[in-house]
Image (cartoon, rainbow, N blue to C red; front, side, top):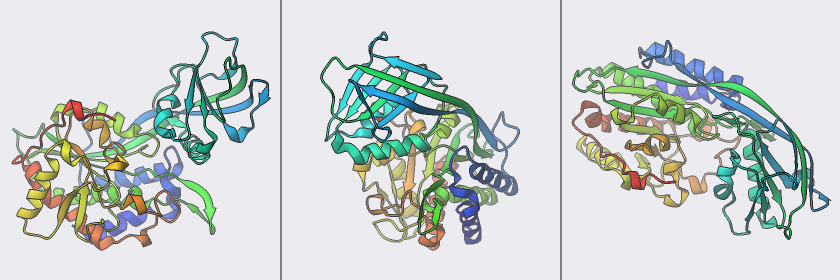
Length: 416
């Protein structure tokens, strides 16, 4: 694994001129163009059906501006209301049929988990959120502000979020708002090393990371760019370095697919679109690489694997790492309460039964740089990161050669 490639790629992706690589921005397109040029340099081939390395797909930017909200005769201040609507011109009252569903999120509720499905409304809903959820409400507001892109055109329904106690029934309301909908093309970057064994070439092994991040934040000591060096320029760099490594080895029996995803930070739309272009039955494994720039809690030369118990993917990597005679160790995910298995781009293919797992080193419960302007290259350990990438490359050998095939993920374990 060439340390020079690792450092050059991560410094390019996490540079200030990428402007934090938020999906749909010029910085993200600049990153995609850079990665496509890297795949071209390495000698990868486009995915079947594509003319180049950029896999474009449409998303829809939806911006709703609430002009007026009144509940039971009281006007609601803008900082206590959020509106998600697919109606270009909304004039909504309690006299309209059908009546909206009324939902309450209590003081102890998990706000994001409880309302996630309501962010793409399929019916008219009003959600009253306990004032104790002020901090979570602010996070929801921030998510909606940067998550204006969605994979489908919105349906003509509305969700209204109110930070306040649920009023007594019947709830009287008047809401006026305008919504603008704009199509925005996003791009995954995909390259292929065709399999060398005719009997195995139809079988695919995917190596992935997401190149998008969260863009521009409120300035902290003059710095407003969330560079996303660890999240996930580190994983995307690994994808490039592994493509270079396997191309030079030139002995892959199975076909290798290298993909840098867009839109992970706003809902995993890039991975969702990518998965729809493949036959999941032909994908024997997915190595999704997410935040490997710092040492894991287990120390140097270690990484962890999410969803370790959902297939024998992790055990196979452990066996391969041990067989190579090195000191590198793959460990089970030490943070099951974080639900990391379903928080990255492996989740889409995992839900289709693919042994798709994320490899990471991030100590996420205590990572103060996560989603901040301080996630910069200078905070990373590039030597350890290169060792992680090398360990992935070496430990993948059995799967790539066809000597190892991970068990499929059971449908009953494919849950949120």
